[in-house]
Image (tube, rainbow, N blue to C red; front, top):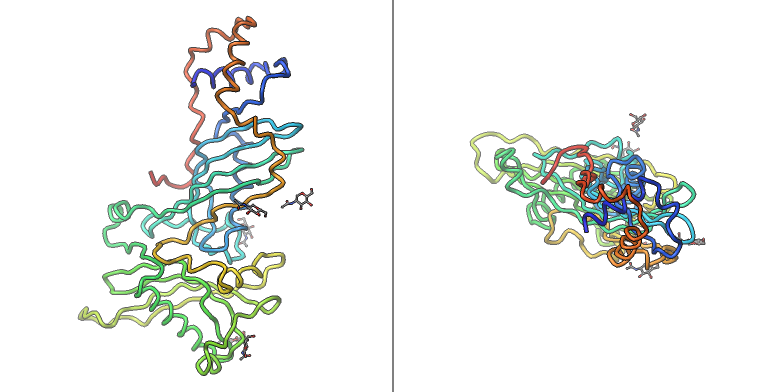
Length: 351
Ligand SMILES: *[C@@H]1O[C@H](CO)[C@@H](O)[C@H](O)[C@H]1NC(C)=O
Ligand SMILES: *[C@@H]1O[C@H](CO)[C@@H](O)[C@H](O)[C@H]1NC(C)=O
Ligand SMILES: *[C@@H]1O[C@H](CO)[C@@H](O)[C@H](O)[C@H]1NC(C)=O
Ligand SMILES: *[C@@H]1O[C@H](CO)[C@@H](O)[C@H](O)[C@H]1NC(C)=O
Ligand SMILES: CC(=O)N[C@H]1CO[C@H](CO)[C@@H](O)[C@@H]1O
């Protein structure tokens, strides 16, 4: 199989494809992961992922694991990429572009996203056809090895996490009696032992109630939608005063950023997604909110599926070439395959 791929690659290098008989099926071609073209495709894919994710954080490209391309009939090419992403500190609601967001450090319990992406390149433009991602936190062992006292991620429905979020949100709301925010999503939760505290991050949405109205009839308060909608994101540290530490604990720290409305953003769907019952508590039992699972574009079905039959398609083509006497090809068949992938690590490796 490896030598077959080598031959296919060599064919490309020598420009043999130009003289390929027309009946040879379209073959996939492995691409070097650091090829500018592949990196460009990955950039488009990551941007797509960030703009279509409704939970958690924006991600940035860490490494391209594998890349291949198949010509598409009648024109264009289909690219398949396997990529590793890393979670940034920017919530998906934040208007800050992912490129400007800092990557979460390993000692904060980093989270990796693994994505398989399919793109169409046509007339020089890449278009994402399909994305499949899942996100996983770094192992607890890795975090502890790097930083024995660093807090680990907890399930998002952990009782301490939920309680800390409620305390923090109440404090934020108490600072402004005229308006009232509701919880949209708990995005992260960690507990530290010294000092005894719960560290949380959560997204909020402006409701139609004042603080007073919220106290009187909380169940009647609903998130404002459409042009009145307003989202924010909070980070808080809530100390556990019940744990005897022999020292006075500081005041709880709550910091929220309320975002300006973003033109053209998909956020109108946000409230529905989170509070309209379409997505049922994504955090239950999980330490991280999952990255988008899939996105599909029905227009993608135009592509030729026969092109994906990798092994059988190559076999007869190789025989044909050998019989067809292309002498310069022979010695190179035994040459080692150059290490094309994975590509460079942009931040740090979680392997
Ligand atoms: C993002 O970074 C670029 C380049 O450093 C800068 O020009 C731009 O203003 C930044 N944008 C935001 C929203 O921070
Ligand atoms: C309270 O909310 C109003 C309306 O958004 C705002 O104008 C005001 O600055 C806020 N006050 C504080 C103390 O946050
Ligand atoms: C908020 O909206 C809900 C649903 O539209 C409504 O029942 C409730 O009375 C509103 N609350 C206030 C204080 O306007
Ligand atoms: C599919 O293609 C049609 C016609 O080109 C276009 O109008 C439509 O917006 C496309 N759908 C998607 C999801 O891109
Ligand atoms: C697997 C999957 O998500 N399929 C969906 C692709 O998109 C079409 C149209 O938007 C849906 O009907 C499918 O369920």
